[in-house]
Amino acid sequence: MHPSPPLYPRRSFLKMSLMAAAAPLVAARAFSRSAVRSAARFGPITRELFLASPRPGVSVWAQTFYTRRTGVDLISIHELTSRSDTADVDYFRYSSDNGRTWTPGEEMPTLGQRPQGKLRRAMRGAVVDPFTGRFLRFRNEGILPTDDPLEGMRQWVVYSSASEDGGQTWYLDEEIICRGSEFDAAHPLPGVRTGHNCVMVGDPACKQVFLPDGTLLVPVIITPTGPDGNYVNPGGGYTYTEAAVLRGRWAADRRHLEWELSQRVQCDPNRSTRGADEPTVAVLADGRLLMLIRGSNDRKPALPGWRWVSHSSDQGRTWAPPVPWTYDNGESFFSPAACSQLMAHSTGRLFWLGNISAVNPTGNSPRYPMIIGEVDLRSGLLIKDSVTKIDDRGPTDSARLQLTSPSAREDRETGDILVNLTRFGARSTEAAYDFTSNAYLYRIPLA
Image (cartoon, rainbow, N blue to C red; front, side, top):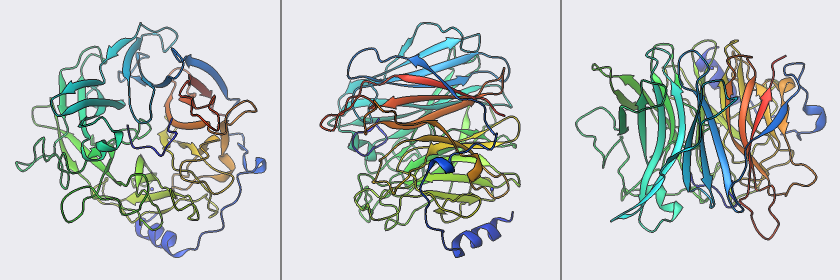
C-alpha cells in the first residue's frame, strides 16, 4: 500500500531472554523453494476476489470480524484509499450467513474540516469480548493542520466504540484516556501529549486480544519525545515509534473500559532505524505474552532487516528488551519493514502471517511473498518446517507489489483460516506507483 515508507496514514521467561541475548544469530538463510514446505500442516490454499477496486487509482483494504460470541454474524470493514497512509472513506457491510451474502455498504466518514485542519480517521480492528459479548472496534483519529500524513506523528489518538447488538448500533464512542485525574484529551496517556507526539494502532493486523482474566490488550505505537517534549526521530528513518499495549478492564459500571499503559518496548535506533513498530501479540503455553515487532533498515540498508520479539511475564505490564526473532532451530531470517499478524486458533495452535525475504530487504521492500507459519507455543519461535507461501509475486505483477497488512480470522463453520489481503501496487511501473488494487480472500485449510 505504501509507495514511500509508511506512516500509519511465550519456558522460563528469564531463561529464554538470557538465551536469546547470549546466543549469536545464525546467518540469515535465503528463503528458497526448499525452505517453503508445509510439513502437511496446511491444505491447498485458494484465493478469490473479495472486493474489486471501484475505479482507477483506488485501493480496497478489507477486514472481516465475527460480531457475537457465537454464530456466524460478520461485519466487513473496508477502506478506499488513493494515497499513502490515508483513508478516503470506510464502509461497513454485514452478513448473517458467514459471509456468503453481504448487505450494501454503509459509509463511515473518515475525514472532515475543522478550524485547526483536516480531521482524519482510520479504522484499526475489532474484537468480540468473550466474557460480556460486547463487540468493540478501534480507530485512529487526528486533526492534521495541513493534511500532511507525517503530521499524524504528533496528532493521532485512539478511539474505542462498543456495541451490544453485534455492531448494529454503538452505545459508546470515546477516546482512550488512561485512568487517573492527570489524564485528559490533551494528555491521554503517560508521555503522550496531543500536538507534541501521538499514540496509534499501527495497522489492522495489530489485533486486539482478550486475556483469560478478561483484560483486553490493544497493541499500539507511540512516538518518542526529546527534551523539549516534542516528537523526535533518533533512527533517521521515515518515522520512529516505540511499541506498547493498552490494558483495558471494564469499570464498575460495566459500561466502559478503564485503561492503563504498559512499559514501552524500544528497539535500538542503531539496529532498527524506525524503532519498534506495529506490534502483534499472543499468549504462549505457559501464560507469557509474545510480542512480534516490525523493524526497519530504512536509509541504512546495510543493516539486517529483522523481525523483532519481546516477551512479558506479567500480562503485558512490562516487556523484555527486544531481540531478533528466529526459526525454532536458531536460524535467523530476513523480514522487511511490514506489518504482520499473530493468530490464535481454536485448536490451541498459534500462527504467524507476514513476509520473509530471500535477500536482505531495503526498508519496506520486497513485501512478498506473504507466508503463514506455525509458532512453537513453548519457545515462541517460528517453526521453520511449517512455513508456507500464501501468495507471491507473479510473472505479470510489478516488482513494487506489496502483500502486506493481512487480516486473518478463523472460519467458525470449517476451522479454516481466512485471510483478507490486498495485492497493493500490482499494476505499478518502475516510474509510477498505481494505487489500483483489489482486495482478496484467501482460504487456508488446516491439515
